[in-house]
Length: 354
Image 1: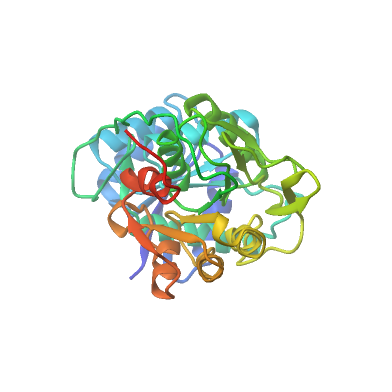
Image 2: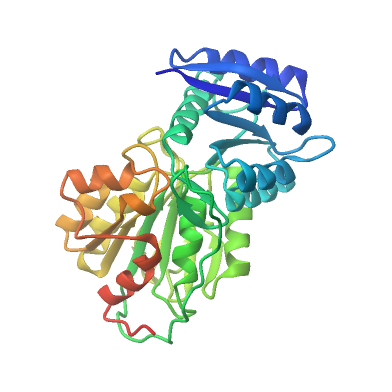
């Protein structure tokens, strides 16, 4: 079945380019384009598209204001199209909080991605958006519901035990909000956490800073060479794979610009494979929402090496792809809803929770 797409962007050139790129996929069709929110509203009513691509920056009502009204009045799948700037990345993260399914940076000259590769990535994100469960203000719900709200997190008591153990986590589509929810369930002295979220390099620093402002543990974008310590969360930068290695100082982070794995750099499998090889039963693996298969094989290798492994359940995933693949190959010890994931993971460490 053809997926009907409405492209919303104030630039005529960008509307034309995105239309051509989307039409390159046999199962996608652009049914209309709009330069602003007012035009977009009329086209949504008349064309009833399946998915929107939405510019972050627009004249008049900007992308965020439009998205907020859309998700309140007529929730539908949205892929944000963002500029490669710090301001663009911060606005995009807010859009994901408001309910956008995913985002992609605008195509640009000199990008590492060819136009063909960009087209494949955009098409994948549009397909995932069409299949996604919508998230409005932190609440996962089916597309035909009209409720919205935010989760309230119970406090977690100070923890002890589990010395030397490390949490390794991977996510993709829907992962920015899922990771936030997971970390909001973690106390300040949580075990070290290393995270791969599929995200361009211009966005990971803003993502880490935003999490750091919200969560009790300290969250940083990994630079490589940091000693892996309790109370710390290390986000893989968008330009490099993240691994762990052992030095005289102990377990430290390591970055690599090796070729993409599963079409991704950073790749979850690279992180999980290093955990399996180095940490064995001192590791805990967590695979959250995302399209594709990245992380499934790595989680299996972690489990085979003695790690405890968790995957997010279908009902709470925005896209039940990566966790599903992991479950199907026997990589998962426990399937858990997102709202219980932090507690279940901490329980695997023998931790006390409120």
